[in-house]
Amino acid sequence: MPFPDINPVAFAIGPLAVRWYALGYLFGVGLGAAYGYRLLANTGLWHKGQPPFKAPDIWDFAFWTMLAIVIGGRAGYVLFYNLPFYLANPTEIINTLDGGMSYHGGMIGLMIAAIVFTRSKGGNWLSALDLIASVSTIGIFLVRIANFINAELYGAPTTLPWGVIFPTDPDLVPRHPSQLYEAALEGLLLFLVIRVFTHVFYSLRRPGMVAGIFGIGYGLSRIAVEFVRLPDPQLGYLWGGWLTMGMLLSLPPVLAGIGLVVYAGTRKQSPLRG
Image (cartoon, rainbow, N blue to C red; front, top):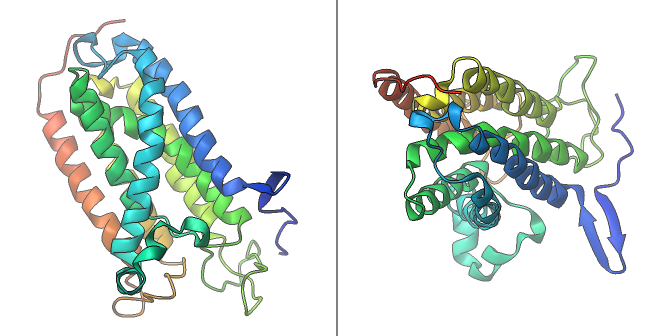
């Protein structure tokens, strides 16, 4: 099927062009903060009725979030995906016009920001990680849709009827729309799964449980999609014609997630409230 005629630039104000990719991050943080506010305000969802910080503080944390995602995402890309190039061209590290953002790096930066921010408020940092896990899928969904609009990070050739011919593909053959696979699995489906755990099973009352579920769900979803997603050209496949850097970086979240679920599941649950 042909690629939809969508301009990567959402709108322009004079010489300033605003791209869908930037709006994906902006609305991801904004909508995530709005949803996070509702979670924080519902104190009955949390361990001992105590969220990691007060609901109005989410707007201050949203500013921390933007910085953490940009700095962590860029640092992760430099370290994990193209370190030799940036060692030879250090001034290019701050040049984000060529893209180059790592989800795993952004998540590490976001986790650090959440822990520091929450400790400054005297809250439970594991509950802060649960909060991030509950809202991050919104941003993941929007940014993956923006990746599709940018015609980047597409998959391997396919004969399936939903294969897309991307205009940036030099071979112009139908390929897996792997960005949409990730939006569906890591974004929409994982959001729904976590919503069930937070509002049906009240898993936020077990600090670390929701963060663990997120780590497992995201890691397994990303590994699955990596089988049909093309690796970054500067890295290629790392081993056997199938192992990618994305797979390797997604394995620690799965293992850490299992550890968090076991840890949270063996602790005494707080009394039901609300």
